[in-house]
Length: 85
Image (cartoon, rainbow, N blue to C red; front, side):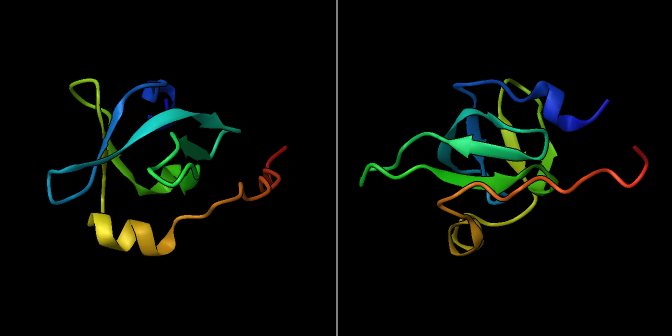
């Protein structure tokens, strides 16, 4: 089972430094997390590959929050087709 199965709306998103910087809005497809709107009213998207764990009803990422904010997207990325299908 992949980590994405444990990601639910409303879960806090914690950076590798142990601080919450976002909240899960919902899963966008099978490989992206849509975050709730920030203070400016903008949603952001991050890949599930950045998730280190989904313990204690929170999503912990494998990178610091400032790096996430530099790399997140404001639009969902198209899903890549599975080569084994």
